Image 1 (cartoon, rainbow, N blue to C red):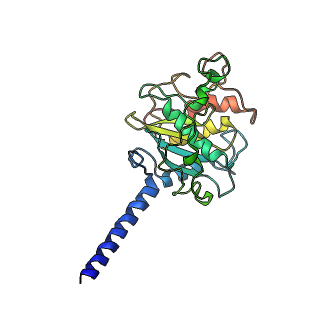
Image 2 (cartoon, rainbow, N blue to C red):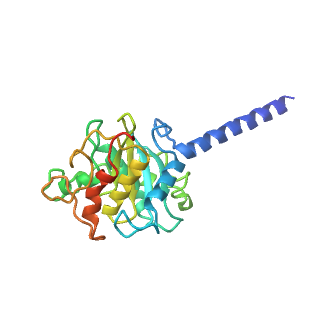
Image 3 (cartoon, one colour):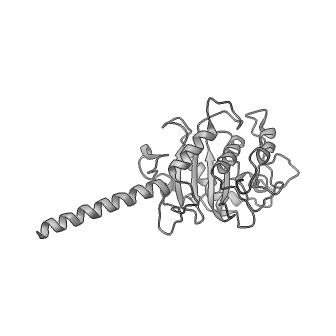
Length: 262
């Protein structure tokens, strides 16, 4: 009788643990992390939105080379909540997985409740002689988080980066802070896998699709958009991958305006 009770208790505990693990795989996990917050997208929501925005075969509104992408989300404490991809294994640059998480970390690390800064906004300031020269050497990537676990799980609901603080500072397009419908800064998004100019456009459209672009203001026309205007201290260089890059970037806040969804 005692053995049966113990067995029943073990089975019940295992089922409960299994349910918790499934929830963690969907929403993210890790210590004091806020990854399970309803404000941050689940793995499924992030994946579906990324695939819709990349929309390979449906034209190329993002510019760049029209490649498959990686996307990562971190919470406000810098914990990686989810990592996903738009294509099948091997169909996106392997090195861009960590870069996407690094971009998310950067946008989160250098945005505030009253000021959103994208990774593209940092490009000019970190060049030699710039006011933030050397910033890219701070907060290095934690390689133990970046490269642990089997590669077969990269970009899945069990990506080994999840639950760890990736660190890293990236200074070109593709990283944007996330502000919920109430304007609360809840973390950041990083996208990588194409030219940095296309990365920014995809990140912008992805954030808009997730309704997490209620930003308080920024350094480019009151937003955290990318600008190629070299007179602006927060500009980025053209990538040269698409002749429409400048027009695409300028149109982003018009076609996909920041602020609460109507």
